[in-house]
Length: 251
Image 1 (cartoon, one colour):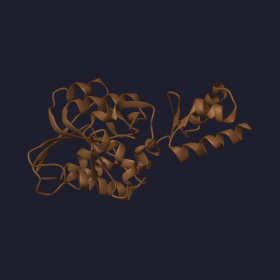
Image 2: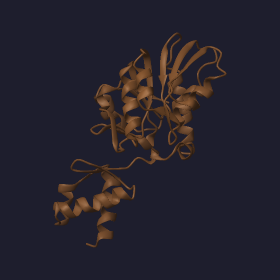
Image 3: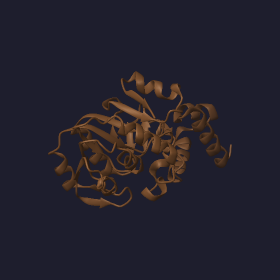
Image 4: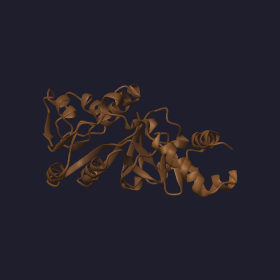
């Protein structure tokens, strides 16, 4: 089998099964694991998959920059943002992550809501500037232009002074075994620090983020409280997360 044919076969299995196991594939094709691993490395370099221990998972399409993500699944993000906004109760302190779905949460907060929103996203802060009942605490630091959020030591230091009721987390990958992940190391540290400052962490997960992975792990999936997903996500997709004890909110 030619290299091009092997790679097409790998991508076909990845689409069909949601993962590739290098050992099983090498046995199926009668090739060495080194050959399969080389193919996986090359496909990963092309952004077509995410390598993990023992094989590969689909790469997240949500790893694009902020501008590109604004046109990715816009209707789903609006629905998820509205469902997340309805989870917030009067008087709560809520941490709202950066990202396009988080902007939708801010945009859809009830006009009469009295609450405090802590965010390291200038985009979210600007969205809430006109909301009369929401006090906005903006965390500063180095601006990570890819996602339009503050990162770095200053941001993490500021977070240590916060004790929140809810944290709405955005990630680029959500996987039962491989955890919650994102495409930047500093961003992963910031998200982990924010989660540790909240009583509950809820992940905003449009369907393209489910069952895929990005390079940097934020948390094991079992360490968050729930997911907010689109109404149309099949039950068999969300069932493994529910089995971990996560609440599933359908938008």
